[in-house]
Image (tube, rainbow, N blue to C red; front, side, top):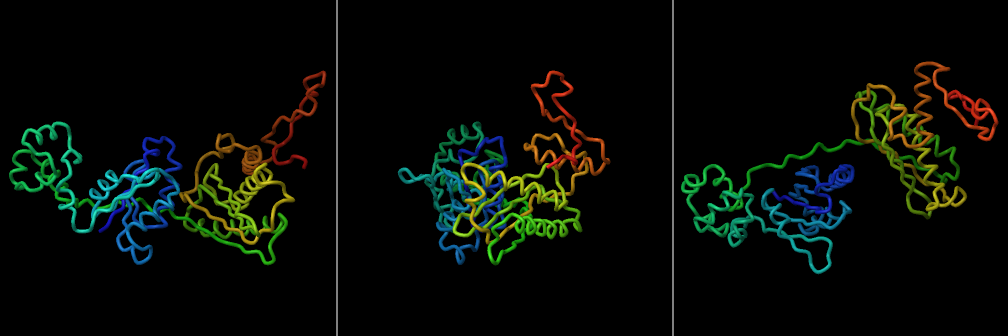
Length: 350
């Protein structure tokens, strides 16, 4: 087995797990066996990837490129211990943002022999006892009889001696590969208006949610990508306020995000938008549908349009005349009752 260890120092100790989870999702495109040791440290089984990606150094470069984040230290070895140590010893060249060290296959013990014994993951008391016995390199510890090490240092000493010999029987524990559903609709000729895009998005959402309902699953996130003629793709990512298989609701929320993105100063106006050649919808973060009160007032909703549609769903469940909002039409009116009016949610003009 060959293992690739990746360490992102800037991610270690990060409280927000979203960037880390997204990075791990991208690594799944390289290998189906990815283990997250902690935030900012990942192990990847790269056994047998050379015919597809080239040398092990190219495999490591591919992983770094997929992750899309630096600085990063990478190391490759015969097991998780050797790979982690190689990443720890990797030194970047000059101003490089990435560093990689590869320990040759089958040469773990010989490679570790001259290294200081302080690199072993030992407790302070054990380190002091190593010094007391004059052990300063891994080769010295590796060369002792196992019975002598066991007698002096116990089970912990045996474990450290195995590591000093380049032995680590612990297997990788891959994280569950996140499941996602995707579908693509192509437009020939390219779509120039919103009507065709809206209909295609609703059909795509219906096709995917129909597949999920039979499995009693619902998406927690939707990703819409538009391929545009002679322009970069346009993508919007929506974390759903609640897991749902309602295709109309998912499509409306995505369209609201899309319209907001198109109208932003960075993307120009509607007239500036090129024609759309294809539409891709991805649903992921699959989980059983939420069985709780509709999250009309959750802070994730964030936008009035999303909140309004969530309120409409509440109104549809409990009947008309239950939900109203105040609209201030005449703030300068003399009497307070003339300044605002009540509008029923779901029956608003325009």
